[in-house]
Amino acid sequence: MKRNYQKELDIIIEENLKLNKRPKLLLHSCCAPCSSYVLEYLSRYFDMTIYFYNPNISPREEYYRRVEEQQRLISSMDLSSPINFIQGEYNPKEFYDRIKGYEAEPEGGERCFICYELRLHEAARVASESEYDYFTTTLSISPYKNAPKLNEIGEQVGAYYGAKYLPSDFKKKNGYKRSIELSKEYDLYRQDYCGCVYSKLEKESKDN
Image 1 (cartoon, rainbow, N blue to C red):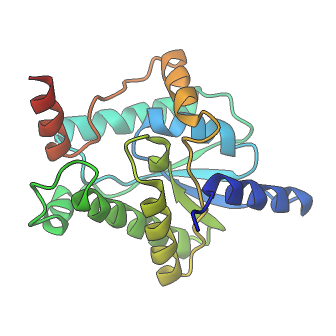
Image 2: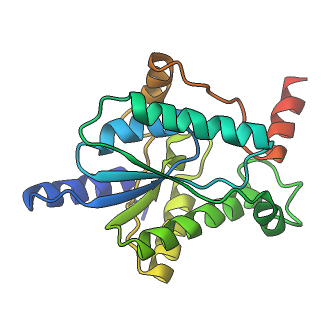
């Protein structure tokens, strides 16, 4: 049976509201634009920390530009509660080692699933070690990302580390549309490819 991840998230939020709880949430973020709506939405219900761990991003200059935009957005948004920020290690070799043999896979295929797992695995580890109540990722806000696969991987790595994965499909409730509006409002740098060199090459080949 097809799961409704937004409905599952709504139920968790309602249960915590009834208990007058504000759980600690570690939010893996791929970039400022994708995080904008998620921050606006979830900061009403959770004490949040952004975890920026994206060794897939290429080139290096692009990575640091996205880090700076993420930090600028956090400092600019008027949210229900302060947002903390953790920058993970930037080690592109880790990404290239993991996806070896899948370089020619199309965007949205097996290479991307390996990349999901790499980033969610690390988020789950940090969430467990720092005793967050939940962890999740902004990735599901994109219409180009596989939300069921993200949730499947999130739950698997969460179980491995003993960390609760917060089910989500942030493109629901017009989340993607709202992220575009917020990107314009805060004049965010909105990249035109996911992050890795392969997604960049695929985007450039389609433009030509």
